[in-house]
View 1: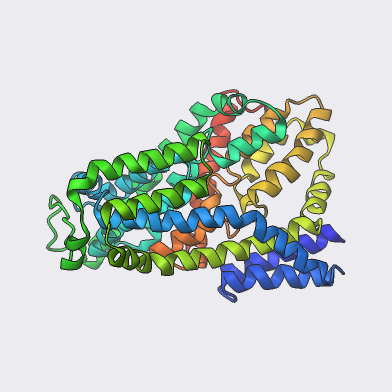
View 2 (view 1 turned 180 degrees about the horizontal axis):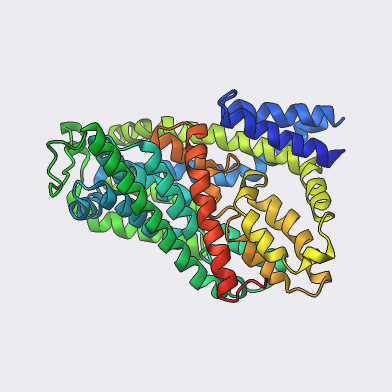
Length: 436
């Protein structure tokens, strides 16, 4: 009963969001609450929601202050030299612009944060896409592919969760996957190049590229207000501050939320010491921060109900029970192929600590190495799949910055990120990482 109720909840949630019948905020709160009431949990449902909200609070705090932090540094012009260099190289050729987008997103995602990646990549490249009338959904898709594939890094959430769940060192899970990830990134750049060629053909056929010098370098024109906010003399100071904040966060010396809180304070004091200027900078980014906070807490309420009610666990156990001995040897490959779509069904904690251990246990009973299930999982589950999943806040940040709807983003991007995950699964088999 619980498994069927949970499956119906997930299907209805995805359908309502992808068809734009309900806004993500309304769907994430209303649908699981109704399911919990149908399941007979009554007033307990409110407690489930509170537990989910509490669990998401540190992440919500990090995202809110990350938006403000990077917004302040962007206002101060920290990314200007990097962006200008990339713009100089890509020129006005869509095929170069798309590849440049993938490169920028990959580099920025070295810190393992999808929010940071999208906060830097989208605002940097969006003016160029708009200038050439390239589709914004292409920008969102390329950023999603690059960030998702890069999210397999050992300090990324999925890999850390997989190792912790299996009680093994993170290097045992990740090191054999290095070659697989490299192949995945090559696939991302290849797809980005093809998308760029398609944009060139589309724009050329419509005459949008007529009169545009392909060798021209796009230069960003800053308004007087933007120029007044720039602090070029503080470029090295801001870079050092960014590295310190990210270093403290990645190393675990300081909680991520605290890192960004302190970083925001320092950024304000260094770049805009006057209280009036500080207030203006906070006000300028408050809307984006509030939007993210509401979505995050709604997602927390959703996962709280699904987890605390037992619906997620019931779904996992029921699904694992359908695995037969004949298919046991192919389980890692099956998990690898399904790992990206599983991001649409399970949040990372529910999957890596609820679903994956059950699958790994079943596989081990047939003589398999459970680490292979962990490696297959990180090919797509909340790696290539996280920027299209309605269960992650980064997805909403990506579409918000890009100016595309969730349904449009998912319809265009899901086939692409699924293709990357399939390519990596095949590569893992060829390289001998996953048995077949």
